[in-house]
Every structure is written in C-alpha cells, then in structure tokens.
Image (cartoon, rainbow over all chains, first blue to last red; front, side, top):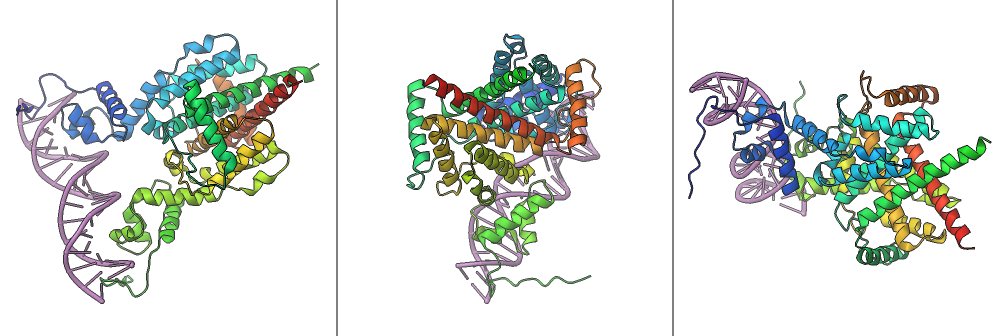
Length: 224
Length: 224
DNA sequence: ACCTGAACACCGTTCAAGT
DNA sequence: ACCTGAACACCGTTCAAGT
C-alpha cells in the first residue's frame, strides 16, 4: 500500500495548475469515461483539491467553454482552400463533424454554447461566406446556408453519438417498409464497412451540395 | 399568511399522483423556466414529497423518456399524406422541428435518447421510407435519407434554441465577408419578420429537397 | 398500494487559513 | 498568488414507518 504524500497547506513552491492543464484534463476525462465529469473527478485527476480549480477557472461552465475552443480549433481550416468550392465545403463539413463526434457526451452542451467573438471559428465562416458569394449567392443567403450546414453537421454528430440502435423497431410487424430498410442497411454496413451514422452523414452532405449546385445552375440559366 | 394543510403520513384516501401527471408537470416546468428541473421542484409543483414520485417513475431519466414520447407524439403524422411527396416531406420536417424547438433546454438530451420500439414515431418513419421507395430510392438509401433529415431537423432545433447572437463576431475587422453577411441578414430579418433560425432552416430544407429532386431526375435520365 | 419523513451519498462552489 | 480544509446549500434516490 503506497502512501500518498500530501501537499501541505499554503501556496506550493511551484504552481501545479493552469487553465489549459485543467481544460485538457477535463477533455481526457470525457474521452475515457464518456459520462461527463465532476469538478471533484477533475481535481483528483490533477492531484489537487476541488477548490484549487477555482483559482484558474470561474466555474464548470468555464471549463466547458475551454473545451469547446479546443475542439473548435481542431476543425481543419486548410481544407477550405481546396478546389472546386463544393469539394472545399465537403471537406470542411467532414472535419467539423469528426471534431465533435469524437466527444459524444458533450456535443449537445457545446452546440448550444455561443462562440466568443475572438473565437477561431470566424475566419472559417468568413471564408465560407466568401466562397458562396463568389459562386453567386447573396451575402444573407450565404450565411443562411452556412448555418444550415452547421445544423446538419451538429445533428449528425449527435446522431453518431446516439445509441447504435436508436432506431430499432424490434419485432413489430406494422412497419414493413421501415424494417426492410433497416435490414438492407445492415447488409450495406457489413458490405462497405461504413457505419450507419457515416452513411447518413454522407447522404445528407451529398444532398445539400447537390442542392447548391442545382440552385446555382437554375440561377445561371435564368440569367440568360 | 395562509397555512398549508399538510397531508398526513400513510396512504392518502385518493391517489394524488400518476405517471402522466408527473410527465406533464415536468414538461410545464421546462416550458416556464427553461433551465431544466429538479425532482424536488417537480414534487413541490405536484404538492407532494420528492420520494413519492418514485412510486410512479423509475428515476429522472424515466421522466425524460416520458417527455420525449409526449413531444414525439406532437409531430404531425397527417402531413405525410400530402401530395406531392416532397411537399409531404417538407411539412413533416417543419412539424418535427417545431415540436422540439418549443422545448429548448431538452432538445439535446432528448435527441440522444433511443426510441422505445413501441414508439409512435415508427409509423411515420415507415411512411417516409415507403414514400422514397415509391419515388425510386433503394430501401437502405431511403433510411439514410431519413436519418439525414432527422439530423438536420434536430440540429436546426438546437440552433433555434441557442443564444440569439451565437454567431456574432463583435467588432473584429478581419472577417469582412462574414460581418457583411451578418448585417445583410439583419436587414432581411426586419424586412421579412422571419427569424435567423427559421431562415436557415428553410434554406437547408430547400437544399435537401432540391438535392433529392436532382438525384431523382439524374437517375431517371440515366435509366433511358 | 402509496404517501411522509429521515437519511445517504453525492454535487458545485465559497472562503478563511496557511505559506 | 495559489494551495488546503472545512463548510454550505444543494442534488437524486432509498427505505422504513404509517395508513
């Protein structure tokens, strides 16, 4: 039985905590046991008493804000320089979904949290709006499209985080089309190795992009 | 100062609680003060001690399950009988989003919760898959499209529930396209009276449906 | 069977005391 | 300035006691 050497009271000789260390540890905890984390767990993991955390973060919500920034920072901005524009949009969307889908239990919480105005996400948003405006959309339309994409992406991340058989009708026999579809998709999953959530995401992303191209084509032909 | 008459201990002469009464009261609490609810608040609202609730629900999650069923029950199934098929899909999607957007704080929680196999939602899903199969899609594809629509709808409900200026870049001058778009949309909001979240939802829904029609047209012309 | 009342094992957070 | 330790005001949930 190894004795833990306790820290004495009073200011330690060298600082043990920092905001980034707290945020990163919290993210680790979320990844390991996905059930959410407590300030007490977080403190234990950092070898510190719970109250010590409050020297570096305002409260638990503040920790979440930190986490959100870290995750948002992982969305690949570089993909937005691809050609053509719809490929750039697709690559960005996939990177966005992956960044959030990696941390299931927090998606919902993070998704409703407003971004800080200094956030890293705005340059990406600016680039996307610019892309769409270049391709002929009005500024306001471009923003609506951007938000629509985000809604789809976050909804898809939520879906990827949901229970695997969220939509299982069991043995009921009053929904034949649905159960047939469920069975067929099962086969598609084993054949392609692509999970249900990924299939649905690609289907939706494909539809959104196809919709954009169709809208553009229609607009261009009407302009003659 | 009015004296509250307390109930004596022991089984009351007539039953005061029921599962449905608990679930409905919980939903009321969510609607009033959107911050979520506690079992103690719920009990107070029902004029009962917290422990009494556990005679009718297993735990707090069980209450959420009940709430989810109530909300899901409000999604209009009737709209799915409209003509043509894409109008039916659009009407269903709007009804779905409205049902969830009415209860902001719970969307996230509810969205990740698996449906019971006896749930009311399956007949609607069956109808939608049938609709798409009739229009030429494979069963597995139809299911993927359905899930993609749901992801978009729930993501949009989340967006509608988010802070109104979730995407406000403040005064930064390094994102000109974005701020221009933000300004233009502001004007569009005041001119049309349609909120930002509704605009984005209609934009995305339009793209998804347009994508479906384009996919169908492409398939039909390839079949010649 | 279905309520009260007391209790248990938790939370997030505050704050004085210590270095 | 930055930690410990003790405390506060909460949670959800359990369970014996009562009718």
